[in-house]
Length: 200
Ligand SMILES: Cc1cc2nc3c(=O)[nH]c(=O)nc-3n(C[C@H](O)[C@H](O)[C@H](O)COP(=O)(O)O)c2cc1C
Image (tube, rainbow, N blue to C red):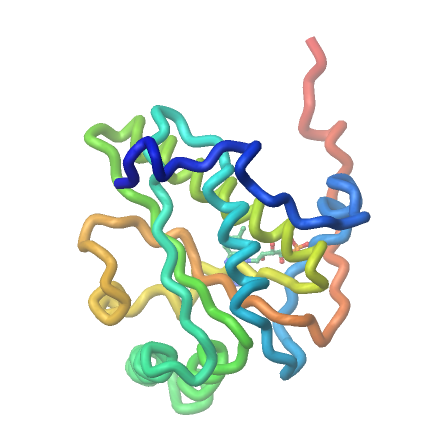
């Protein structure tokens, strides 16, 4: 991994300007299943990724690994075909076509993995940290007018996926992130936290 001299500190980071409050980002963040065709610039995706490594990670294991599949890239096509075949074997043609377009449609697709630890406890901590990293990206995306949709379904399950991406055998899949300008407004409700909280 990186040498000390390569490390970032909060003072060395140029924090992107935004008027959006943290609270507004939390409450406005929403996943979407349809995206506008608008492309997303690489610099914007880089800004989202920059936030990922500021997630808390116990023992500073830096357990996240990202694979960015830009639109129309060769890897995007390969993954789309894998998902098509996998869904064809496990469903039918229309499911297979839906799986293919799920991979092809989003302006940006990022696969996220978590590294295993040398014991179960560390593996779990690492996974928790990578989930925090995804949430950092998702909140930053709100400031960019983008949606991050996090999935662990069909598009993440093909046994050959890790080979196509270059992920190691023992890395844990955290999810596929579809990123773009949303073309729908969804508002899944939440139960007030009081029902899940004991103040003792
Ligand atoms: C770890 C994780 C995995 C998910 N996997 C899927 C999935 O495979 N398919 C799907 O339709 N939604 C998936 N979702 C999306 C959730 O269902 C979504 O959070 C929920 O619909 C609420 O949407 P909201 O957070 O935008 O309010 C996943 C979310 C998370 C956090």
